[in-house]
Image (cartoon, rainbow, N blue to C red; front, side, top):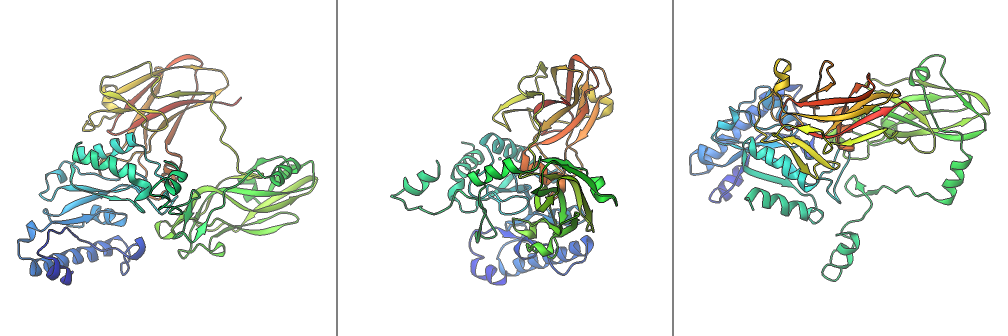
Length: 494
């Protein structure tokens, strides 16, 4: 920073403060949050002293930012003192959802606030580099939210290779200034093929040194499917017990074993032997199960939850038993499945888009293209929070649903938005008829299992029991700002 100050001090620069480790690792040399805060505080103080000595103007007038990316936000919330003239650069969660924005006191800061936002991402739980999954209505909603809560000083966008994010870059630059097509065209239609091979339709990972082959339904695979044993779920609790899980087979066959699990990453390694999470044994087979991360491992301490093919077992005709042993600490197995591919999610009996409401309050607006179809959200974003005692005063929307005797649950899906700033929540309430309302929070911190699942599937889910029949009114109260209602689903056991 000394050389930067002396050589570039005469130019209009913005200086970043703080301290992180290399390659997005947490900074080295600190054991725990308290030590990290102390070291980061010392770094900021030293960095500002360097600026004082080398730039010929008041320190309060030198543009400086603190980017609250990853663990820096945690340090900020645990006592890191940031001078009032420093701009707080808030980060999204790497998948487009704002993590934290300015509260009322922070909005008074001299340095103001900004946003660091991903239009491309290489990391956990999935990289998205070739094409952006963020629609323009989504970008507009999230960045308008950031602007509403004070992020107006500086906007920084992570755009990766730039070319695949041209549409998004143009849109967000137009949005900020006031004014959050296919491979063949890029390769052959632009400047006589200048961009030929610039990127491939196949996803890539780990600094582009490996390719992920896409599964294709070959004739050989079709024959294998016809000859395979019947696919089915296996009881997790039975498999973990001394007696094992019973599998009955009417043929003799080899069949893959899949596990939907959350598993720890050890030593920041992608090697299968470093990511073994249990041992599987049957009467004839025995092997270690491993779930290997496919992205940059420094972003995460665990893999999943996701489906992983962990091996193949041989089924004899008749009764077979499968045992899961030596479960590693930090592992959670949700489901076990045997079959050529992991199971498809069962479709709901009824799917009601958010736009098919019976009635809504005026403050709730329909945003075209926000989410799977269209989204419902409260505008303006700067609205108060509501609680149990004044729940009925909250902005609400009502649906008419027709429940059948075999219906089991009603599922509410929202965008997986996060709270707007520390100290507030992201909640809504659901009321079936005149029953007691159920209040749900959808905020999920980065790299938690819930967050990983949410950003991969594109929604947050909560359910209530379908304990009535016939036509019913379903009321949804949006208690905190920035909840985006997507759809209502009715699941049946039939």
